[in-house]
Image 1 (cartoon, rainbow, N blue to C red):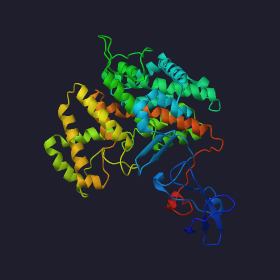
Image 2 (cartoon, rainbow, N blue to C red; image 1 turned 60 degrees about the vertical axis):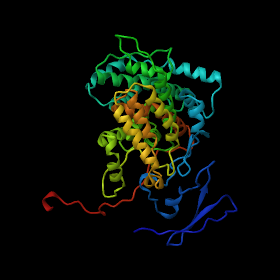
Image 3 (cartoon, helix red, strand yellow; image 1 turned 90 degrees about the vertical axis):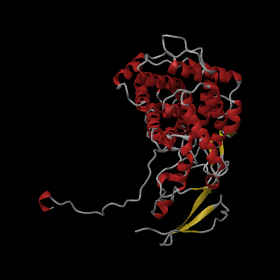
Length: 444
């Protein structure tokens, strides 16, 4: 039997703060406190709901549920706002770099020049993998998906670095953070090299984060590799824009796995697996698949009409966003870089990129899309950039994981150090069979 509750108007509680007064059918009455953050919507604290009224809340997908208290990232989807530690992402994209953003997310404030130099040096000098971990790659099929390799190898790190996994030790938490950020590009590049059949390329301590990644991905022993500065700049910007995005699916997965006390490498591996889902990290790959389906600029009008037809299953991928109801602020930033990359690099897939540019213009000028705020999002542009850089679609979500790794770590550290933290344990609305007696097999 469902209980019905009457929510009265918000009233001023002279003892503390605003609250909702809740009355159950049996007359039980209580107050649910309203908590306010620095910015954004208030939240109703329902922690006492079951104890006092014998009922749970029901919110599939947690679309209106605050699962934790966090001071890392803020999103206002109505206004198109994204801030890391209070800094608008537009300012960070214009003036910062990924290493500085990593420090910011991990520590709460922008670093001094000495702090940043020390942090960058630490990351550079922790990029090497244990040789045993490299042997691990030999156990995968040559065509194993890079995300499968990434998840498995990150999970295995607890077997190599088990001496510094005490989550209650702040020093161990720092060591873990540095190792994940430093070694993930090396693991990603090794996965790519396995797929291509090329020899593994070791990291270099004289290169910065993105240059080192490009070197490990595309260099071969037979000849020198020249790093394109535009490619490095584009990767750095993409990693900044993907560094964190509040309580998304993969970040919530990291928090949930970590709340059990599981070692942090297992929690990150769980986050990688969640990111692999096509509804989460695979969106930019879906954009390329959509462009392949459209095929030619001459077909854009036809497919735009299909997208407008509610009875047609075709959808324009990379347009609109579940959180951003106005525009994706990351897309505004990355759009300029996308065009810069396409203009600067030699591209074999020119027709594909011409198609993407034309589709972008059609969607930006069509009243149907403008009225519904279906603007190109960050996935639309990131997929095109990765394609232009020569990164295969199977690696797109891996690149996403490299940027998001620092957000995962920041949230894990915040969760694990919260004195009020508890193991995550959602409840449910049970709709199965009522209590019944077991029948012997002969009587069924």
